[in-house]
Length: 101
Image 1 (spheres, rainbow, N blue to C red):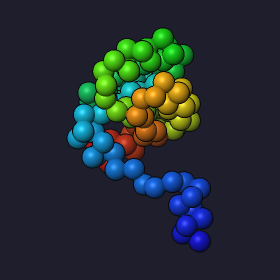
Image 2 (image 1 turned 120 degrees about the horizontal axis):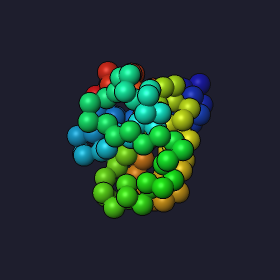
Image 3 (image 1 turned 135 degrees about the vertical axis):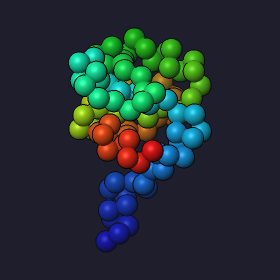
Image 4 (image 1 turned 180 degrees about the vertical axis):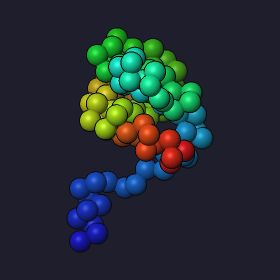
């Protein structure tokens, strides 16, 4: 049973270790949502602006962790970023990820 769940959901990600390797946290919520609370040091790039910023993110040469309010938009952002060959992880909801860091 555990292997089935592991295959469905993948291995747990050690976000703290990824952050310690220099990962950038990309918050894809709107500017208003970001202003209402965020992870210190995170960068706000709303999902609708993200495609224009992927080349700039790639030049940084760092892993990325995407976050949003619920994990849905950060999942979409991860899929977009992944296509460019950048190491990227879906951190899910920002207010839950902050507790893991």
